[in-house]
Image (cartoon, rainbow, N blue to C red; front, side, top):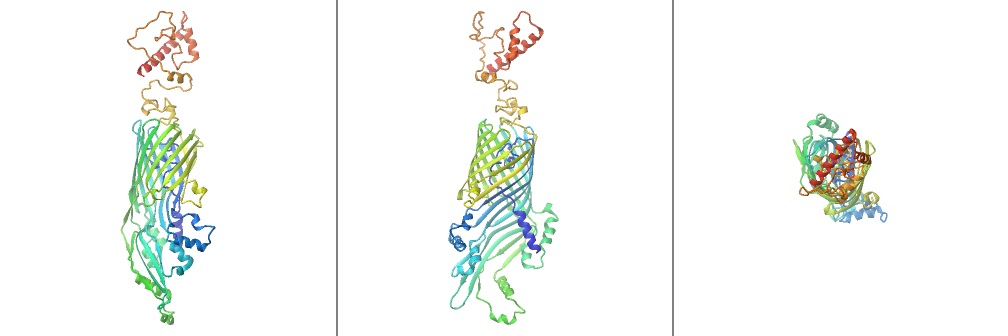
Length: 579
């Protein structure tokens, strides 16, 4: 009973949520989780606390219609599955539960801490196991039933990741991440197969030939597979408590590194890249190795003489003893063994139509349980102010067995509360009976201290002298060469002045002023023409003061105002000469 409870708890603990290919989280400035994919990316909010769950499953060889087809009964359906070479009952999943997400942003840096449970698995279910369960060995008279689980692997671990990203120039961000890992369980069936042949002939009424082989490694929280199979008094629960729970800090330790960069070429184009999962896990709790060579065994029936002594020997014991002698199983306890994490890499190219509307082109590799899956996607992202983020994507997943997916993502920035959801395959939900791929992500963040950045140049609006124009961090958010101080976007005169800049006179030109020349035709500015029309930042009230300043009697107040206006004209002329 204890063993049953143990395996039930283990299965429930490992049936979390999944996450593999990137989606809504990729380079999303309103989402702190973007820094988990690329540590060089700097999200917008000053402080973030969050949790998140995800699920992803991939089964290219079958779908729901494979098993539940209204046009065929159960018997026909199972026979079709067994005899169709295109049907493969393999399932892979990549699970992740984010228990805690913390993000903090300073002026030029971003720091994150993420604690999560990661579960990876690939299970290869033999089709003939369904046939034997449905029909027994009668369906296999004269042929072989194969039960091949080779390649089945499963791994679960806790990961605590810290990452740091920093803007080192106006255009380049770099980042690094480090993960401390504690392994929970691992099983790798490198080779695992069995077969059964059933035959009837004139000599014997019933004859079975069976065989198989396996080569596997396991570390199951301190559980010994070898002892569990050979010792009926073995207490699995106590073994786990003694081996794993008593000293988890030194159990199944691992490490991983990650790197990333973000390069903003100009206000239209951004390039980014990241690598993660560069590391390994050392399994030292209950580590075992299991091998068995392929030695066929033929069963021709029971010796009827044993029926005279059934009190001392049972048929079951006789079969088990014969089986144990026929198949030579060697299980060895190991000090430890290592599993290498599959490194993942992501490359992105973004084109900005505006700071809030842009397209992304993303390529990722090293995904899947075996690290053999790649994807490419095209995303269209739209921000509706600071309140709603929307993303529409098309993804081609697994180039060897292409899956075409349409995805959507959305976040609601409701003050400090931010719920978000991402579906990488909408058709997988709408036509779930035909889908080979399912993916969903959900999360909830609490964002504190919004660092609003309207133009997306990395300088928050409060510190951005040109908060509506993409600029350089080193020039307070304005374009390099702009020396005019804080730009006032509220005055309508700014646009017209910027569109038609004042041209400064050449130093070789000689001023000409006969007193009668029209001010619109004169390239020079006289003292009488030093009016607010020349300075874009002056208001109608200042213009009136300038008119009064031309009167014979000039007050002290008007003199000060006139001096300020003259300095503004000098600044405008300086900018024009620089241009």
